[in-house]
Image (tube, rainbow, N blue to C red; front, top):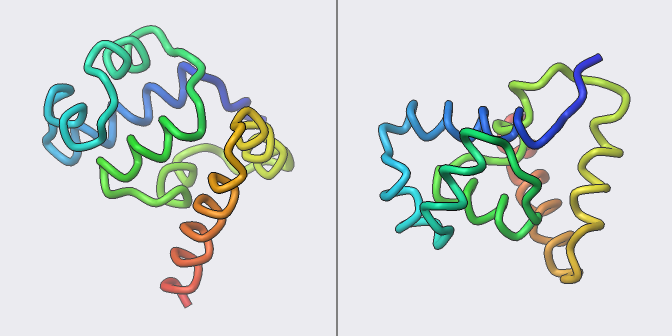
Length: 109
């Protein structure tokens, strides 16, 4: 089973950024996340908050489903997402994330 870690998240963000033909600077500009954080995340891996992940995915115009679909599906996927969400102090993040997931799933039907 593949474990979801900071390095893999950073690698996936870099992959999507390159697919979208965005520089780190441009992604920083449109997402509101610093260039330094994006560079560190992509090269060294770093734990990030759900707020930061949401900003990056919005900047990349990518849903949570699309982002996480690159990772091998495991029994722990839900637990990993819940752990990521639990790091947030803002309960609105739960609603935002699950709304995005539901919108994506309903558009696939």
